[in-house]
Image (cartoon, rainbow, N blue to C red; front, side, top):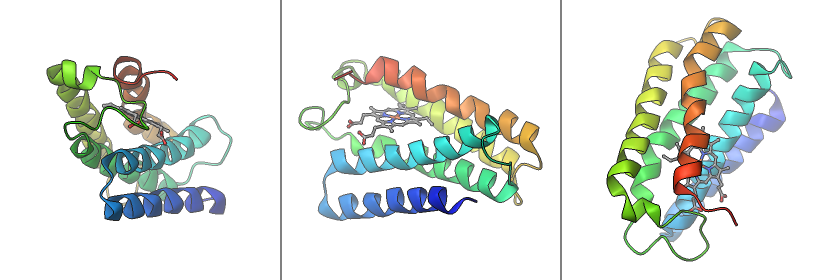
Amino acid sequence: MKLAIKLAVVAAVAAFGVAYAAGDPIKVRKALMQATGAAAGLAGGMMRGKMEYNADAGKSAIATLRAAAHAHGSFYPEGSLTGDTTASPRIAEDAEGWNKTMAKFIADADAAAAASGRDGPADLDAFKAAVGPVLANCKACHEAYRVKN
Ligand code: HEC
């Protein structure tokens, strides 16, 4: 894996730790989304041929996406939809839809991790097939549950 990307993932995960320790749910979920973004960037770079496919990097991207997907939904306590956040009030207004959207993200990430196996997807096509459905969740959720500012 390219060092810069490795460092980006490590930095995002470290930011998560700091925010978590500070007990600030908005910071925690943003840090989790930054880790998600770093992993998606790594996945996209390989999918677009900007960097050579590597099974370890593929496995790592999928594992990061999965960990963030599982954790993310826990950081929307009541009263956390205002302040320094781009989370939409719709998260509270349409809790059922939000939970469904989150559950789909988690299910797709679980499926990708299962397909990824112990050694990571064997080649780029296997990686694309595994991670593609996970990446489709980003835009769908952001359009519905994030405000543009
Ligand atoms: C189930 C909903 C959902 C899914 C799926 C989702 N996100 Fe997010 N994402 C959000 C919400 C809500 C925010 C706004 C968080 C806030 O500002 O408090 C956000 C914010 C972000 C941010 C900005 C973080 C910051 O520092 O402000 C990035 C980057 C991001 N998402 C990347 C991704 C990527 C990449 C994916 C797909 C792999 C993804 N997200 C999937 C809901 C989602």
